[in-house]
Length: 402
Ligand code: PMT
Image 1 (cartoon, rainbow, N blue to C red):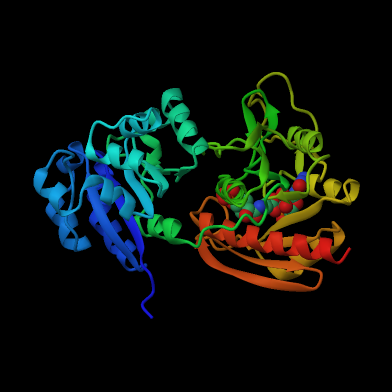
Image 2 (image 1 turned 30 degrees about the vertical axis):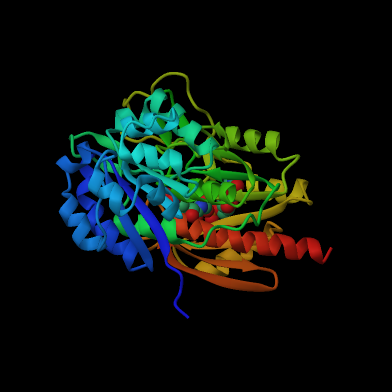
């Protein structure tokens, strides 16, 4: 029996990343998908309809009032044909139009006339991405059920550096064709820590680490997609807050500890993904330290262990730790699992710079008392889904056997 193909309507709007869409179509087709592309007028400045027609094998639509196109497959028919709509790249202007229900061209009309699942891949200048208006419009769309695929950070076509780049075509194809996350965690309350902490030395200096927050934020997004109510306690990072999460921003380990303890009482699950500084300077002096001496000696004192405190004080909370190690990864991880009395631990080999700290990808080996599972190298967003699925299975198992 032939396997039913996903029917993806790819909406291309007028951003520089549109030049990547023929490749995106090819990647989608490789994932057993039939693609029909629809371009806005400005998208045609960046990618030709003919190129998209050639790679998709389907006619490309761009005009609401084209009698020939309407005779072939009318716009309402096209809206009903799609089971998924992916807008990539989605400009700030198009996002604003969608948020306010406008239907003044073919693509916006199709979005309004369709009941398909909608994915939006915003791509724009980093300042436009950060703009309050853009974020408010995205929040409206997310509330209506659209999935917002956060843009990547990096150098932009305009020369700026920051968040706003469309993810790579392969990543987009993976995200929109992954099996719909089941609501494994419906109604569960999850507290997640993410990112680094900063420990002040004086008013202008601190010690910290290379955590970008990507892994923890991906976990928060995956948990939300699986139906959980998420509180994300985050150290200083440069990533957009997940839609629908309560985000508590902190700087130091002590602040992170307080924020977690304030939010943990009603939680079902705690995940410690943050790279919390183990030590802080004993005294953070009030004035900038002067370079009067050849040597400078700082005395450090131990920070509270947030994960261990949650596991000790909140026995009903299912606790998941991470272990970032550069050697003897499994041994140290298993030791932390036992010593901190955790339910699970995800061992992260951070000696490999392609995974772990501040990378796009990661790989984990997860241990619990009776077993272990390797989660192979994958984009952090994908890996987060795999880990959250495992967490939900072990959580259910623990409660079934209690
Ligand atoms: O943020 P990214 O750039 O995406 O990178 C992700 C990551 C590498 C930071 C992440 O995958 C990871 O491994 N996080 C744990 C980092 C860490 O601090 O590991 P650790 O082995 O030092 O700590 C063990 C566990 O105790 C961790 O769950 C940590 O959050 C927790 N801990 C540690 C110290 C402390 N004072 N309080 C804690 O809660």
